[in-house]
Image 1 (cartoon, rainbow, N blue to C red):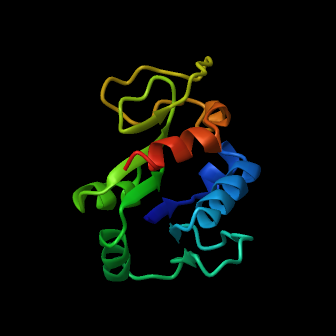
Image 2 (image 1 turned 135 degrees about the vertical axis):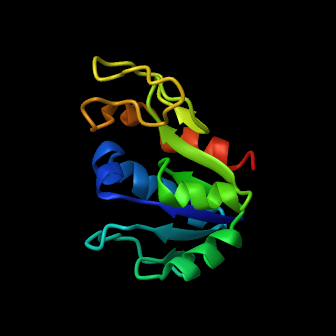
Image 3 (image 1 turned 30 degrees about the horizontal axis):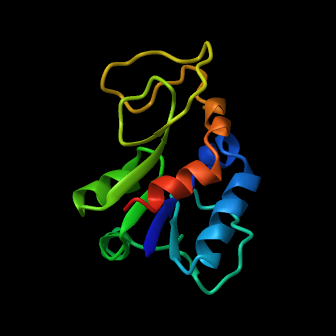
Length: 146
């Protein structure tokens, strides 16, 4: 399977680096190709593997082409998620507990949660620490349903 993954500064903070390492390692070990995208120019992904493709300096045209060749998308509900949805990929987004979107909804509600109706962003603190309750195993389970 070809998996598009979106990493941001914010998700590196709100989803622990150990989770990212575990997920990426498991996906590669299971034989999948992982295509990592970011708009944050200073992200340093410390994973070196032939099956992990860092698409950090790609043009929008190149990004669209690579995402279109993937089977599933994992990340947050931002630009790359929208591109993947438009290309018909299965979407697995990290979502807060009161979010209304496509993906894995955190089982933890804190005082930062606000019910915004149809919004996919629902944290007034903008740290989404509730993502810590979404484990790599939960993400793999959703990705593999694709």
